[in-house]
Image (cartoon, rainbow, N blue to C red; front, side, top):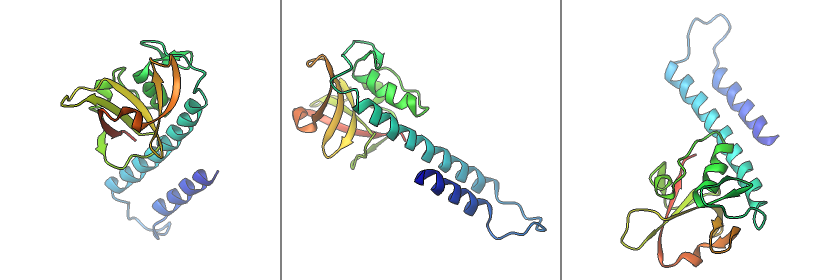
Length: 165
């Protein structure tokens, strides 16, 4: 509710910039596009947060299934793919390809993609969703289910944080 109110206020402020009904001035097209893109992005980010919450509730409930990408069963990149699909973003079903999307960030936020590579390698072997406080949501083959793990469990790997939204 608070987010919808904020978005409505932004819309009102963006489109009511002090011009009167008698004015023939038109807002610059680029400004209109940027406002629209920012509103769409904010909405998608909100949907991403909701999807992360749903996925977290699947911890210990959704089994690991190689090549799966639904709550009935998923692998690591399938989990990431499912979460982002709920926000309207289509990702490839590959940890390595997901690791080369978006932009690399050093301060991850909840919902960012976390990818892992072996030391000295540039290809990624694993993907997860960052939850905050050093925790990830992870479809883990070793546990045969979806788990919440600490990044400390991956000390031997290179870790990269990717922001798509």
